[in-house]
Each structure stands twice: as structure tokens, then as C-alpha cells.
Length: 167
View 1 (tube, rainbow, N blue to C red):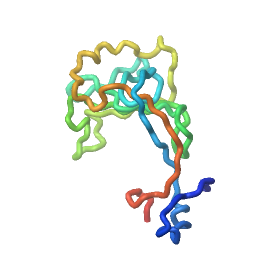
View 2 (view 1 turned 90 degrees about the horizontal axis):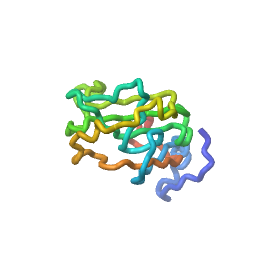
View 3 (view 1 turned 90 degrees about the vertical axis):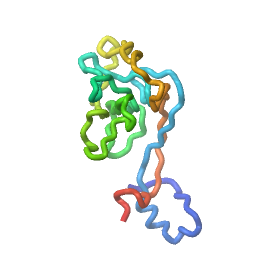
View 4 (view 1 turned 45 degrees about the vertical axis):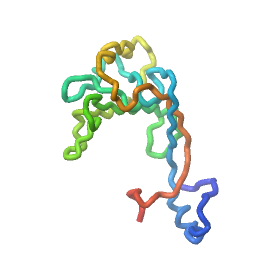
């Protein structure tokens, strides 16, 4: 990938400039601001986008999970290997202290759920708009007490020593 920006590095690393520049990869910086959000926007927390024929994700106790994050790919900078449209959602159990993490079985989605919608239905008559059932949940300690609208910015940086591509 050829980048058109100047990599800023400390003078001590200048001798490694070529190697560092060859490892540069794009990334998307995400920033959240407390704000009202729509069902279709990228956000942390708030009410999720759910087609009317889809049940709200539930945890192992049968309780509705809370939206942790929702990413609308049409609002994001385009990066190779990422969808250009659709919605990616992360739900977690509000009653689980680890928010669904299971260190023995990390891929079993019993107290967290990851959902990808390849198409976003923008007709409010075809999506769930009544979330009054969520108001009965005890959310005082939920990790995201208020919705935050997301803003995205494309950036570039060399891979770090923690990146799986680091050699």
C-alpha cells in the first residue's frame, strides 16, 4: 500500500524509516460525543437498529442485551477488507460483570452477541421503534449510561510489536 503522507518518527529511529514506512497500515480513529442518535447511526450505547422481524438479542438469563456499539459502514472511511455498507452491532449482557466475556469459551455468544446486517432498512415501519421493554432493566451500572454519536477519521501508522503482522 502506497501512502501519500510523511511518517513522523523520532530521530533515533530515522535509520529504520524505510522498514517502518513499508509496514504502514490504515486505521480508523473512532471518537464518541454524547448526543441524540437515530436508530441508523453509528454509536456507543442507545437504542439499536433492529428489523421488525428480528428478536432483540437476549442473554443466558433471557434478558434483553444492551447495545454496546453500532457501526454503520456507510458513515466510515473506506478501508480495504471492510464492508462499504451494512451495520455491525455489539450487544452485551447488562447483568454480567464481565459483559459477556467467557475466557474458557470466548466464541460462545451466550452473554454477548455480534450481528452484521448487510442491508439497512430505513423504513421506520419495518424496524423496531418501541424500546419501552428496555426501561424495566436495572442499568445503573451499565458501562455506557448514555448514547454517544460516533465520528470516524482515517489514519495511517506502522504496525506495532503487538500486531500479528509484526516480524
